[in-house]
Length: 110
Image 1 (cartoon, rainbow, N blue to C red):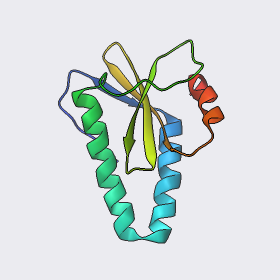
Image 2: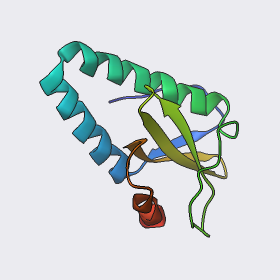
Image 3: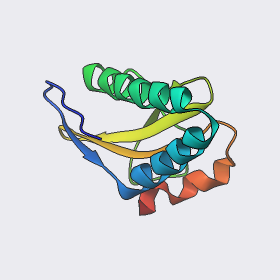
Image 4: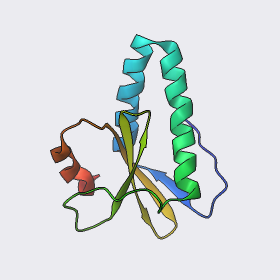
C-alpha cells in the first residue's frame, strides 16, 4: 500500500503494523470484498488525519517509559497506535479495541 501525503512529518511503518493490517485485510477479504476495499480506503484517511494533527489524538495508557503512544479510533472497532519522535510518525500497530490491554506492554519492543 502506497501512502503519499504532503506534511512536515515523515512516516515510518513498523512491521507489527503491517502484520496486523494484513491479518485484518485477509479476514475482511473472506467476509466481503466491499468491506475489504472500504477498510483500505478508511485506513488511508485515518493516517492522513494523523499527519494533519499528530498530537491532537489521545495518549494511550501504557507502562512505557520510552515513548508516549497515541491512538486514533477508526471504524468503531479499531484503533491505530502510533508515536511521534522529532518529525517522524511511527505507525506501530492496529488493534481491535477489545483486544487484551496486556498486549500493549510489547509496544516498546516493536
